[in-house]
Amino acid sequence: MSGSTVAPQPTDPDRFDRALRQLDEANTQDPNSELVEGKSWPRELLYAQRLYQWVRQLDPNASETLLLAARSQHICRWLIPRASYDMTKVGYLKWRNELKKFHAQKAGEILAEAGYSPEIISAVQALNLKKNFPHDPESRVLEDALCLVFLQYQFADLARKTADEAMINALKKSWNKMTAAAREEALKLPFDQNEMRLLKLALA
Image (cartoon, rainbow, N blue to C red; front, side, top):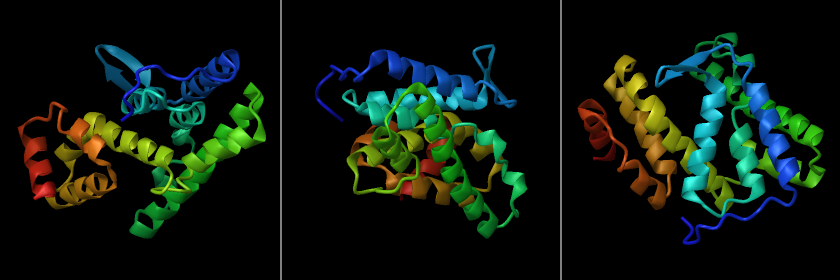
């Protein structure tokens, strides 16, 4: 995490705001919803904003490219449902791979419409595709944020309907991808007794 709290300004603030607005408008179309404090939100809109917030928390100096990648990482995810692929490990991996390509393509279309150059679009898409993970520091911040969104907002629900062994394996995979700074943030989260039990088993 950076020691500075002053975030760099986008090269063109109006263009940046326009891009965020257009990305959010696309995710607003998600037919799936999630209830937060009595208000219903389109699931992918909520996910994008949570991921964006974690990136900003992990790196207050996050670049414009990284912030755009965070806001577009799961853009229009519902358009390629898991059920459209075989319910096997091979089917799951194929689905995940197709999703990454779809998100990168969709993000590129929206950013081009907002006025971004091919160079910036390509850099955002490289992050969407995790092309240079873990060697690129920005890809590590994004992956940390993805893992923290999972732990903060998805872990509890998944733990209730997943066998312990599978849940522990998922936690191990996430933990192994995270940096020390992200692990520190994760341990501050308000896990309940069952979540903490599973996490301790995963880290044992």
